[in-house]
Image 1: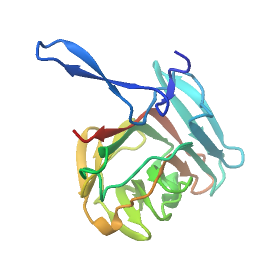
Image 2 (image 1 turned 180 degrees about the vertical axis):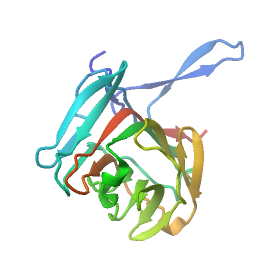
Image 3 (image 1 turned 90 degrees about the vertical axis):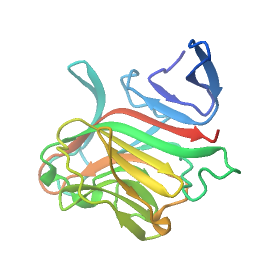
Image 4 (image 1 turned 120 degrees about the vertical axis):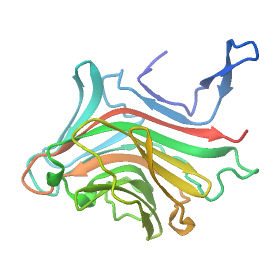
Length: 241
């Protein structure tokens, strides 16, 4: 099977294990779009990801202790951006997910990431991990769902046409590896850190209902190089039963 490390399932079948009454595993075909990125390809796939590297910034596959990830870093120049965005957009429709007339009940995005250099050197206005209607790491963009920095403190937020809602502070050592997760469901968008639900946002007027790109990236605040290591990434829909 070609390019197993970089799979976006718009033309392939997703296999989900289910248990039969006899307790044995069977397989069920799922045709909803999904993404799995474990970097086995040891490179950035231009069929699934786009990369923005300002100035002398760099992006490259890397390993540490057997762990594979993609490393994006700025030069030591203020206001330089580095980010990845998915080539394809995803349906984000929290107002109607779960309705009897739609095929999906929930959208889930999860990934592993590590900030490079002290978080105080990252520009708060362009540290963003999540979903955006624009191919941009600018947290002031309309129509987004993601983790961001507020005075160097991690939070989550949603935005629909400039109406915003934000979580409280989320305690995290961002220079460590962490697992992030966003669940978009009817009536609530929930932010998870390392398997723990941190906060759910429920204001319908702040929940975007537009197609969105996956965006992961940061910006140098001053003359100090910063970056982001991006590990495993998964995105999928849960179907209406």
